[in-house]
Image (cartoon, rainbow, N blue to C red):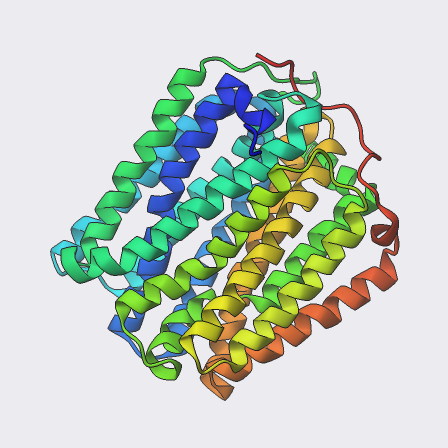
Length: 414
């Protein structure tokens, strides 16, 4: 019998979860539409890799500052500002596209500005979750957050093909702008949220940034999961090559491209729902490492596929494996981190979490330009597994991590 996940019984987390579910669908719709848009403007694979560069540079420059801001100021108010800014940027993208003034360079510029908003948004949002649920429900909260992300990532890409085909490219961007209202309304309904602060966090300073970095360096289990996350997504990230695979390898159109883009999220939602029904996860380290191996192998299968059905299922497996990995690594990091430094930990993690796939998109674009998209994807999957082996050799503690080696965290139930 399916039960209501315990984290959703906490009213304030439920509001945030539902708002994210609706908003992420719009965001994912825009992400995949951007890839198609750029492929329409040019047939050069390296141009698709430019999106990754436009996303990661602002995150590298602003993420550490965003973490200090999340620990120094009201996280809920930070989210209200970042979500509003992202909505306005999506609206600008739609207006420029509709008026015929859009160029690849304008797409890069607006994408970079949205990445600035993300650099401040992500630390505040992830650090807010433990303030909304008690520690015992935190793994479930991250499982449900993953479910929200992946459900939105199913609806968004699947609908993007239909919206582009029948409403035009700009319609996707307008819908995304409207979708941000869901999170804004949720944040208003949540009301004030208490968070732990220390006298040392009086604002943005190098000392406060350094404290966050030093904390991670002194926590091998957190550092190892961050590095593994970066390595796996750097080598095995192939999202930007999806339009090329769809058009030039599988020979399908925009509607099939939307279905293919949603495949990873279908697998991820199934995996996240299964995890949400489990009372607890044991041998989390082994489960985490196993999911990365499956992720790499499925990426190889996808790169070698010439059938739409096989490619779809391979992507679904990568999504399921990545979902399990995401749930476990987020739980490890948040439970191992005290509240007063949680925003800074998340900001450093964001550099790894966002840097891996975004730089991976640049790498994939260059490799595809030189050797073709299928070979770029296959070698990426192999690189993911090789990188895993090197990290286990350096930090074997991942093999023995069980899941109950954590600090008390979270907030009282409401």
